[in-house]
Image (cartoon, rainbow, N blue to C red):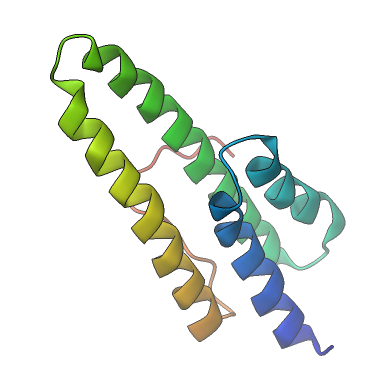
Length: 111
């Protein structure tokens, strides 16, 4: 497998891991790729994917608390839609432009 194809595959796997589950598996794939790859673009994509996962967990917790006040239901619906659409956009972008790491908009970057 050539380097460009490997970069595309690993970067897409980082962003697509969120579709596997909402447990440790979806976070474990980007962490595993981050620790095993030498490619800087793939590492940046793995870090961005981890940041997106962490942000989704934080927002879900906050919106679940707001659900107790009845105002969280629309926010949870928006969060579900965002958690589906944004990774799809990321996958398409890393497959189209494999030399540029994808950056999710409006998230806090912890890594």
